Length: 81
Image (cartoon, rainbow, N blue to C red; front, side, top):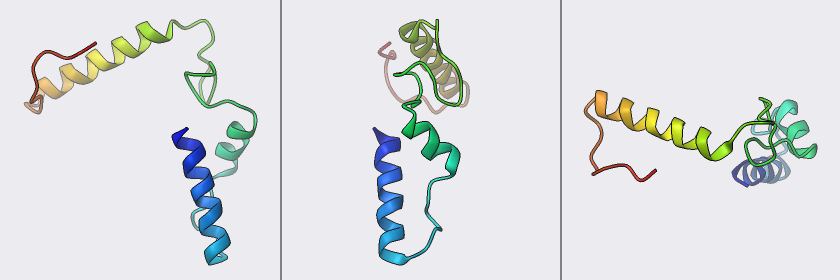
């Protein structure tokens, strides 16, 4: 949804300004057109087919929390996984 919003916003900016400055790159537009928007669809820039998405997200979140703790940036209690 965020990518759709961004590409729509870029198209609106072009219509207003007449400039391609904020136009989404073709690879983004093509992925959106083809329904390849990432984990939700199982494909995007990477192929996520056969991946347990919930486990993948939990692992990535845990890695992020560990990095924040390592650099002393973690401000909360235990992470909600």
